[in-house]
Length: 316
Length: 266
Image 1 (cartoon, rainbow over the protein chains, first blue to last red):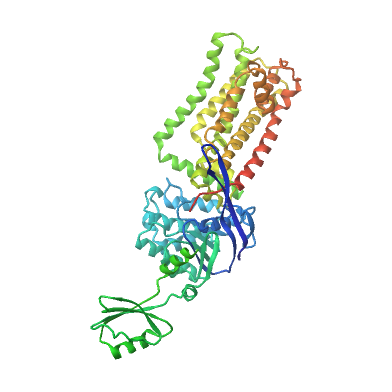
Image 2: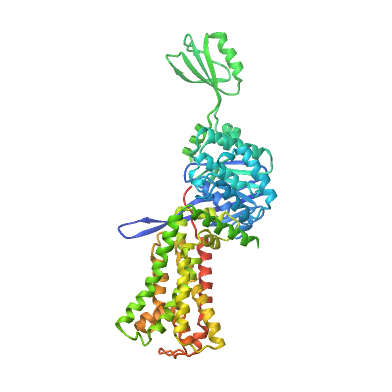
């Protein structure tokens, strides 16, 4: 449904060279991306600042024309067929509002109905659903400029969905939101994705968004795809493992070895030991430990996606 | 039909937004008409010093001034706010317009239809009407048609200049006031008989850029005067057509420009 082939976007920047001279330099924001997204997928798009996430999204939505390569959404080429495409996609740019600043939120929805030429009955059904799921009723009559960021973002989501798009592009939808608002946005998007009617493509810096929402993770760096797959696949590929942290009454004997686990850390004079689990289950490892040592406390730590991603960025 | 409703909705949104700032709207309405009044007053002041300027009387000159004022305000009211494109490009806010199912140019126009310029429009039309009345025009069918078409032609011409100069923002974000030199400069140029300008300057603005065909040439045809600069009498009747190439060029530049749009980070 969404296809990108050898997609590139180059920008020319002028760099100061001497007092008056400027030299032109070409920077590739997107440097040859190949990606296919099927209907109903929920794709998380992550990468460090300047990696080309937003640029890709802008080429998918027809905001920017690609420098070379192909891009198609529903078989439409976004740049010449921008207005036709716009009727079938929803777009939320976290840092740009598409609401009318001085008008009550409800009024923006009414205007969008005319702009997208949505029949009144359909509009009403979709708006009711969003009102229920996003608790819009208490601020529907408040001018947008007076809304909190969290309220406004709920408004933006509604605005992007009122014409019933089959794909929703979200550029940093949770940026700047507090924990509660983030949760509200995430559970709304999760529900939307679970219904299977809408394909979600979102960029974010908040990996919790990805863990909660996306079954597919695309990591992009320097304009190229460096990982494409599930979160589990990312862990497997970068060898991130679960670890077992134990507090002991006495330090372990120096020649101690636990099958299927390696010691990766030791603290408090050997009273706290960390094992990385390579293949063995936490249960087997714990059983092996309590047989030889007196364990006071223990915890199993899931691999941290943030660490994995940080390593990935540095490698690039 | 559906598109018209969409544009009406955009314009309506602006109108209601404005009503939330009633006082400032009233102030803008008045200060705006003030600007156009001043333009016309300048011409009167000039003729206090001399009976003729460039071979034209006050009444004849006012016809050109009125024509310019009417056509310019018509353009300014419809597409004049496209000047805001600079801001939309610089902030990247143009992104939101590009994701809507409507062409960008009419969106910009209707999103910010400057109704505060409404009084100005009335004033420009009045001056044009008065000028036609005091000038003892020998009315023929051709002249009636011409009198009706000329303000539209002038508006299209100025509109094209607005769009053309605003498009600079796609290439140079800091295009700043360059565009105004052509729009407001052009308006001031056409407000007077072009016989007052020196040769090379006149050749450039009047004939090369086409400003001479906005008000001066059609005014000659309406007045039935021969052109002291030597163009034939029919030139005045066809001069509104100069708007067509202007609109075509502006459209082409706009289309190229929008593909050059770079948006902003994030």
